[in-house]
Image 1 (cartoon, rainbow, N blue to C red):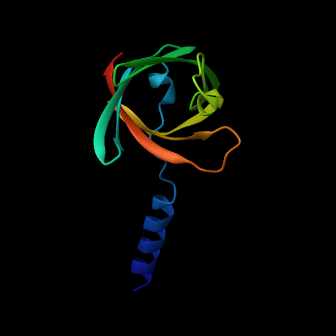
Image 2 (image 1 turned 180 degrees about the vertical axis):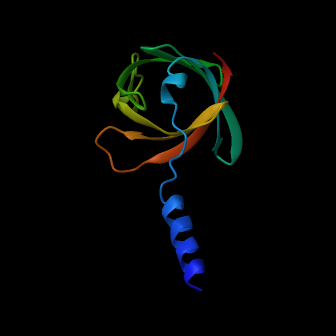
Image 3 (image 1 turned 90 degrees about the horizontal axis):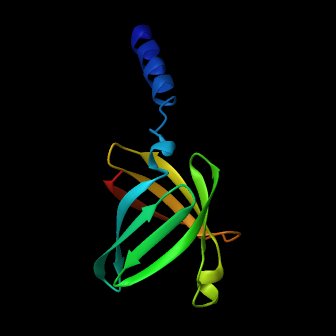
Length: 125
């Protein structure tokens, strides 16, 4: 009985040490796809990012944003040619986990409390 309790304690202590993989610097540049539901329909957006610029392609439109890295896993996107007030607000992006082919992220308007999550898949390096 005592050995079982010690074994359980060791297992729980090791499980608490688990950290998700975060090789964020591997994703500073490249071409990516992001899928989301818009009005009940699955839509795909593609973007190309280098260290300081991100170009988004969505439904025949192209947007360019500056990229300012805060650290290896967080950056600020600011639309360079906003068409309305909403597009003027910078977006804080935080990479939460990474895998070989993509990453999961959290994003929201800088200073805002509402956060959304998404995942992207790398298309090209």
